[in-house]
Length: 218
Image (cartoon, rainbow, N blue to C red; front, side, top):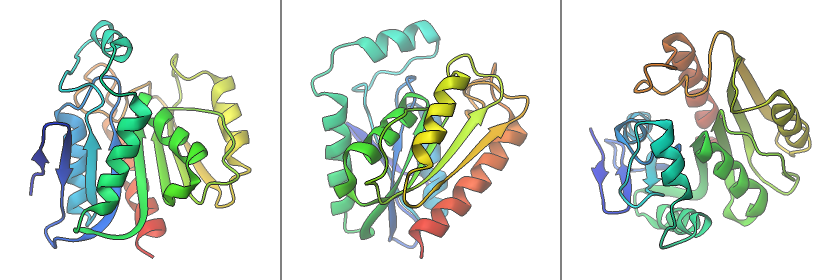
């Protein structure tokens, strides 16, 4: 069952009506159909998924357009948009419990990690990043972490990934980090013809589903 596109977000609810909440943070392409489909897939697995629109309705199809979107002034700082979305998600009657998960892609992965490092009070229990790295102090976070990264990625350096691993090693609930051979940045996104890798994408999604079920369904 597809979700509902709203003025500033996309919301997908499981057929059973209730489930644990998962925030989906899109990449610098904006809240396009692909990221809405991620919400739908999560809903089909029993989660209530909300994807806030960080670019106020605008989407990009090229890197040049995406750069402009990312740097364009917005009515509200990104971190405030995300905190407002989390507050909304946790307050939905369809969401069971206060603990929730976050999945971020590239730019969104960076923000997912930022939320975990800077707002332990949010009670994030599962944080997944797709090819988005951010070193930080995760020792106060109650979250378990999961990362999916490409083998050949000019957007995420080996040193950045090393620093992230070192940071996550200190997280109380640990982390699982996967590197996918023969892939590049955006390998998970089926609408990126130049980067999409079907086998790696399917494996990453199976791992993500297992991770969320383990840390949110218990």
